[in-house]
Length: 391
Image 1 (cartoon, rainbow, N blue to C red):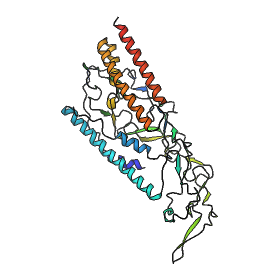
Image 2 (cartoon, helix red, strand yellow):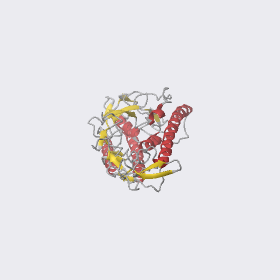
Image 3 (cartoon, rainbow, N blue to C red):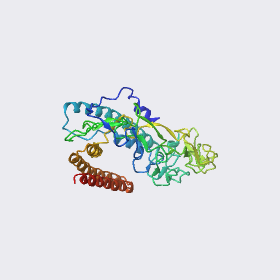
Image 4 (cartoon, rainbow, N blue to C red):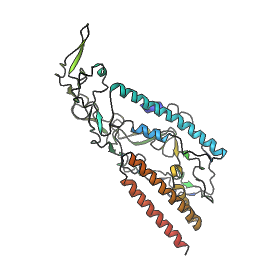
């Protein structure tokens, strides 16, 4: 529901992107001119896991804030490129501000209620209960014994959950990132000093979502499992007492001042049997209504319908990789080798940067390293084949 506010302003059409001249379009080799291809998961890329929404509820917002930050800084634009880029940045900036305001509001609410989120630890459900802020700090919480956190029942204290979209048998076959579902690519021009997919602007219309920036994927709240741990009791089957807010003592105003008496509802324990999950510890996912999938904000463009060009942005190498393949098919071996070497150079920088980012985020790089090794092997085989053709 929070995210609907961020999309309220997006009723108009997307800003016009630079019209890249299509020179002798050829069938996209990635999807074999079908418009769909088996690619990395749209939700988690190669990681196979996502941040747990129970103990890290702002992780998705942070991801959207990163996606809506401005595209790569450049100063060598032509007038046409500059106009197209400015239109993209204006829309991204507006959406970025909306997401930031939502995060700021959440932070203020959490601060006021005393909730603190730590990866792998779920805040005490008594925090934030209506009226809990009225109790004196000296009256400790008997529900959590003043620890304030419990081991997160959703992620087993790891801070990460399996990606629900990866578990779907259809997750790999999606709209082709390279041709954006158009089934064709422009034949690269010589020399290829600029990306021919986006006109070197850095962004183009997102091919994964509809015009409103929505896509149907596995529910991010339940990871496609259709059930979630009960938020009222965190799976313990006992929730904080609604009368004393988990304190074991009830606040009574006797007319001359407030005093605290033992709570009769919970018999001073601070907890009662959970009537939300009816002692089952889990409930049907409220987000997807136990469907497992639902329409959500696109994880590739954060609902902006503007995706970073997979061919060139952030040091991307895909455009030159595909260009080498297309040129080789046309018998232009030397040009294909030049493009391939550019792709290899850019690839190494990309993986170096991504490894650094995952390491700083304390996320395993094993999957990334395997993908890097596979890419190196593929490029080496392509180069060997091209050189063999010259003899």
